[in-house]
Length: 302
Image (cartoon, rainbow, N blue to C red):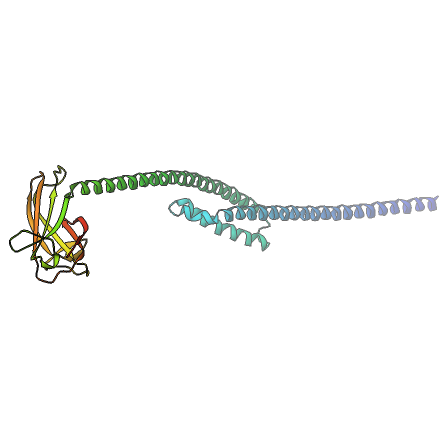
């Protein structure tokens, strides 16, 4: 009987011991499991943070690329405060990318701060792009307007040139209308007594006569008529000085001042022969008011 009780006691003690060991093992397993769960959670959080950090880096890179697309248009914003913000934002993006790539941002707080930075930069980028687009439209409108202005200016220039050409033509016509007309030009040799000498070699004087018809377009007043007689040998007869014609000084045979009243008038000019004259073709020219009034050849015989 005592042996049976002893056996039962040891059996009970064994069971208790087994229970204690089971409890201890269970506690250890639970603790180990909790540690594994915590470690898994930490790893999961780190993976999430790493993933968020990678996403942030991609977003910052995308924003940076968008800013870079407008880099060549940044100069258009030089007079606007947005340009200063644009420059600061670009610098900030570069710093944040360095931070993200250096593994220093793996905390929820810092990730949240970076997400806020992204929101700010996106807003700035939208504002910047809107301003650049607005300037682009304004520039396009200005280019169109400038092209229209250039076309109008070209048209006006063409009109001005046409008016100037017409004015020049009209001025030439008016100037020519003011020119003295000459008709009935003739040249004869004279004897000492003033009678006609048909033999040119015996002539003592040459007489040039002509008529100036009525011309209401010619200004009235004092006119100086210049006469040039060129011999068959090509030499100018006489030496009565010179006159200005087309910017040059031209020598003349004789000159005469007349008072032109707008009415028809006959004019006679003389040159006293002081050299031997030969038969042949003589050229007679008349000038006045910077015009060549007439130029004609006459054959004088022996």
